[in-house]
Length: 256
Image (tube, rainbow, N blue to C red):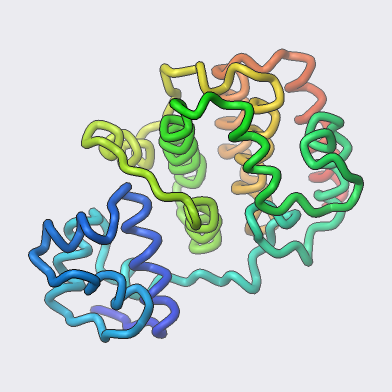
């Protein structure tokens, strides 16, 4: 039975699933034979989404119809440790302090205050050759998909976190890349292209980003942590750096 979400849930779901599949609004309109700007209008709530179009979109985005139109963004209640990518930080101050106890993370922000904002992400992108930016985001989506599926349950808060990361960035992915992103939900992903993780600072940021995605619900499942540790080794984060980060995480877990 289809459950109709609020207008905001429908709009958030339409944007999230389109971006997760690496499609532009124009590409969706072309595939479905819709008039120009119709997807834009659906995502902005300027037009009510017809059931037949919703069904077509769910098929195109390879998702369940209920998830498409009943997407719970929960932006105001996201338990994300700091204002990474514009996310609000209200509930996990202790965890935030641990993140900033990592001198490399503190060095990215260049400040003591617990607020990265989008500038942090932009600084990381500056460290990666421009030609590899698209590959970095594809890798990020693959790893995030495998992470949120690690505990065998995908929460709306986790989907919202991924949606926030995608917000404001436009890029196209190829068919094989799109398949890899989807397959990462079913099988743990370990990418072959390590060039985007060449710098130690990028590696630290990436591992902390995975940890943040794992704790948006206020807890860290052991299966999520096991996967993050495997990723850290895979991208060749030095063992001493891994130990430093994971010791901080254990401290946070003990403190509740």
